[in-house]
Image (cartoon, rainbow, N blue to C red; front, side, top):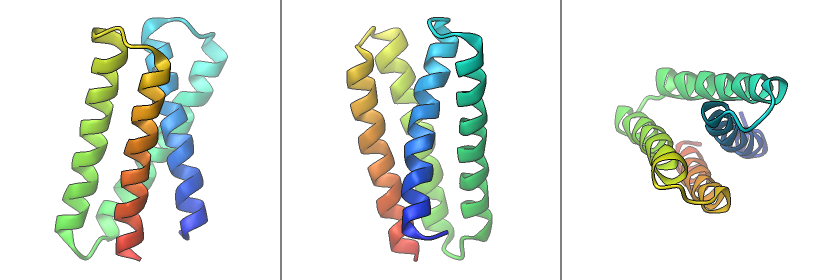
Length: 107
């Protein structure tokens, strides 16, 4: 997957994470939540594929760490601490940028 595909996937994954937050909070309608859940599944599949095909296992562990840390921090920001979704979205944007940087180092 090239850089453009990786960037598009990271953006979709970030949107999907926000959609899962809406699904948890029940603020969004069910159809949108299901669509975003499918996009999150696509993102998770991409991550598993990257980890499975990574020759440098340290980079794969870093990628997994950023994903888990990003999900936990986003849930804490939006749900537990009641931050606005704008702050949550900015965090996801930074998180996805870090994912892109890690991916571009592997190319």
